[in-house]
Length: 212
Image 1 (cartoon, rainbow, N blue to C red):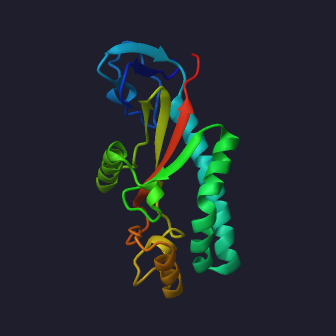
Image 2: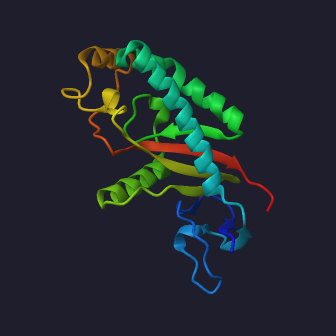
């Protein structure tokens, strides 16, 4: 049986806690709460479109593009240059990928380097949930919400060894020349102190709703 996302239509924010592991379920089983959106209208429409999976592909391609360019910048001139590269190129690269992938793309976080990436109140609650999942030893679950007639997916960004070169401990992981560049370009920086395998933020993927 195909996976089905249950969409509740109505005004305001519609939340669907939908996870990657969307296995097919028998029709006589109770729907998983993570596969249901909720709003004040309580109207339901079934959709066979897997927005969570579509958004995951988009986020993965965008992450790969940024990672490839960042790695090239580091290999070319080191992490100090990579900070400058990200300051100038990260958002344009993201916007370019959004055009290619026909979606709206953005990274959001609770600890910003660029203030433009600040998560809103709802997104902060999603980040908190993902962090709690990781603290309990689980992989953080992505989710999909419906906002103003758009399907919006949120996908975790987890730190690796490359990330901590610019986002790790300022006394242990970040070179002093890199730290000075960060302080010069981002005087209000809050995005330090991470270790490997911590939640750095989320990809926000906004998709148009499609006909079933």
